[in-house]
Image 1: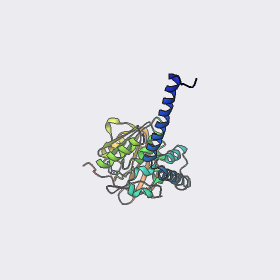
Image 2: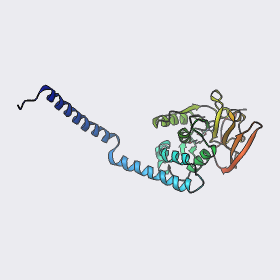
Image 3: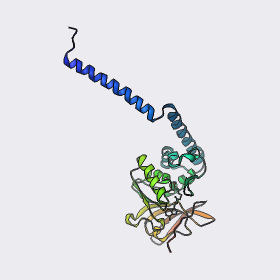
Length: 251
Ligand code: SAH
């Protein structure tokens, strides 16, 4: 007895390989996630995100469970350049470069709730910025088309969205006054930069029965939530807001 058969030897070698591979993988993963500090960070961000949802959204008038859930799950801090990340879950807008900001969490939630997005909807967003609002919408809608006038912001948003697996978001660099005619009509339109008046092209690209949320005005602005009707538009609600101006109005 004593001697191993060739099958037993093969099994022993295979077991050794599995053990060795396991050790190597542990070492690799240990390096890439920066062990404890990354874990502590991850816990901290999700704790902050939960507080944001409880204290800034639920404590106000955000009641739509799908919206609350989306905002509990989308990692807002990853849409903000590192220098500003500590502010990611604060009750304020945060700079994202090029003089632009990611909207305050409550405003993202208010607009998203007002839009009443359904899983079969195709949504157009004007003003991609960081891509965060598009990410929240992409959890709720079938497809999101988003237009950003600053190329480097559009590129960065596209990368962030792809790295987080939001495959149903399409980012285009262009002038949002013109919408995205090739993909129209849309069930919902959200505008996150303020024009003086509702751009006619956007109204044309909204389905009859569709809803648009848009801040309008220059110094003093109001967010309008509008429904397109066969005769024109119906104003559903308003909220005083402060958005960056929409640039490049066509003549
Ligand atoms: N929704 C964004 C925040 C929007 S900030 C987010 O979730 O981060 C407003 C954005 O609108 C800015 O990035 C600005 O560059 C963009 N913008 C301004 N005028 C525009 C236009 N005419 N067309 C498209 N984007 C425009």
